[in-house]
Image (tube, rainbow, N blue to C red; front, side):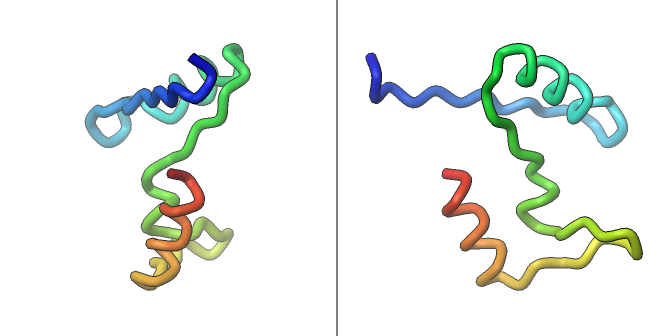
Amino acid sequence: MKDDIRRIHIMGSIGSEKTTLVRDLFSKMNIPYYELDIVVRIRSQNGDIKRTVAERNEYLRKII
């Protein structure tokens, strides 16, 4: 089914290496992955910056 969209949602405690697992696994499978933290925050060298509700919603729409 070409148009069949499937998603995997990895859940776990803070610091449980979810991102490392996903990054390694999905790169081997050649499929994109998205960190849900990035939906809420923008990473920067000076620390994370919280997105506005509008920014969050727009970013989430792009992922979905």
